[in-house]
Length: 345
Image: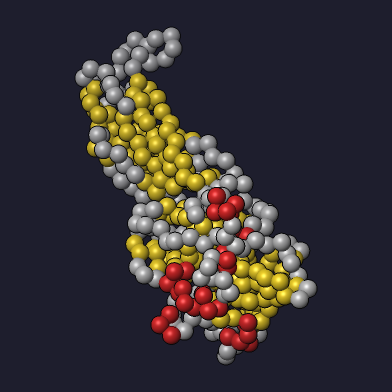
């Protein structure tokens, strides 16, 4: 998985903010989680295309359940799968390792009219009740707001943290490249309150483009019963009170023994739980310094999984030559502040 790097230089007195790599370490063999999206396979006579979808409504249908899933319309293009028409494709939604829901693309709805071209598709399927719960739908995030993408790459659950770099009436663009985006097309994008869109594009060299659900309100209201009233999202008081994630700010003080004027790198480990991932970090010196010691530059070089790498420069007189029994007589203190996404279990 390609790590994301961003370099920024800080003259002390300012704070440098650096984004973490786009994806956290995958959780191998993770249990099914409908808020993370479900693995989607679109099959034609010429091959299979992998992506992601998520459930927005389910209702009783005789002795079975009628499901309404949302995904990217791009996944349902017949080109490349050996078919001439979308209706000839077959769709398989993997619930877990022993259970899948299968349907035909004849049961797919695509936007039309003024909403034509919005990268959304409704996939309907009738099957036995699987216990899946519809996601909660939320409004889109503001500029610079944190959001996450949760999806499956094979059997692994991947969490990607992003900030809104730009937005329009139809799309939100993240601020960093995704590690490997193909299978995450169609995956839900979430703020704390719920799902606001889905991944339309993204790769190791491209920030994700998120199609907003609000861009096709008419299409969704026509194709999904109860969408206007909020019933389609399965919105209950309990669900609304349970955020998709929370953003925590943590501070770590890092003592650095003085070694005279010069530059050096320091790796700062960050303790993260299995459902936590770094968003970004900042660093600054903590005064006072020893007389004659001058603050130089400090840089957050890289964030990777649970590690922050700092590069800093100190100028001025050399350190004291007489050590104490407890270590060097003088040392710098650097404060590292990190933002962490925490997903409730």
